[in-house]
Amino acid sequence: MSKGLIVITGASSGIGAATARLLSSHGHPLLLLARRIERLQALALPATLCRAVDVTDAGALDAAISEAETQFGPVDAIVNNAGVMLLGEMSKQYPAEWQRMLDVNITGVLNGIHAVLAGMVARRHGTIINISSIAGRKTFPNHVAYCGTKFAVHAISENLREEVSASNVRVITIAPGAVETELLGHTTDAAIKSGYEDWKQEMGGVLAADDVASAIHYAYSAPQNVCIREIVLAATRQP
Ligand code: NDP
Image (cartoon, rainbow, N blue to C red; front, side, top):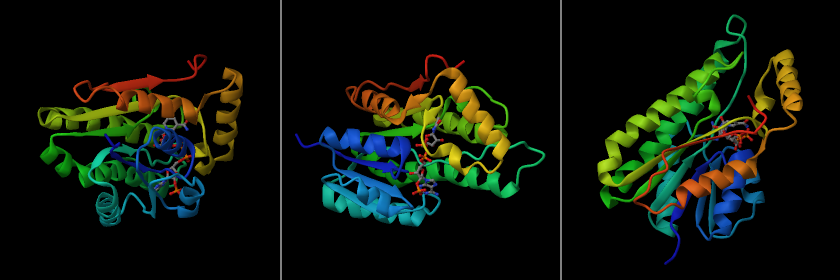
């Protein structure tokens, strides 16, 4: 049987790119989305459609998914992975930074879910994988807005599962600890940034994006009647 179409948001770097490589190696056709289309195309994966889509633009997301379904058949799974982390001290942080995290990390996830859910419910088949964070389970210094968005991803996933479980749609939350990616690069506070890098060094390193991709594939590849609801994974030495 041919493998189903998987949509990955934020596939231009880090966890999304690693997941795209792994799922492609297992024979899945893919729709890869991010703003930097050249980075998606540079992955050079077979049976893959790349589109420059900002996940906050629901219309663009819907259009790309329709196009991919015409080419590859119905969406079997979506990995709502696109996210930004702008760490900051609440009294000093620019409100535009919170807004960006709310827009990408929460609205972007909701847009991704909405774009595929009606089809999955109608077909009584499908998997929604939301990438949260260990920062959606516990709090950390300078993470007020980011933790807020990731706690929201957990709540959205839990509540969505209650809504769609009777329709045989799986909802999975993946919550990684620190991972070596470009994520920290967008934080504008230099002291917080270097403090975070020191913390990583003190732990002796963090997860690789491939570690998270393996967890995503593990959860996805369970039989359709098994829903691995949540995986929290972190470097062994992360407290
Ligand atoms: P990266 O910064 O390497 O990747 C983030 C991805 O999100 C990029 O592909 C980026 O693509 C995309 N993205 C950002 N904004 C948008 C947007 N508006 N529309 C579409 N795509 C967007 O970080 P990670 O791989 O680490 O992050 C992936 C997910 O994992 C995030 O949700 C993050 O919160 C989560 N996570 C990461 C951890 C870590 O320590 N790295 C730990 C726990 C969770 P482009 O810029 O091309 O649009």
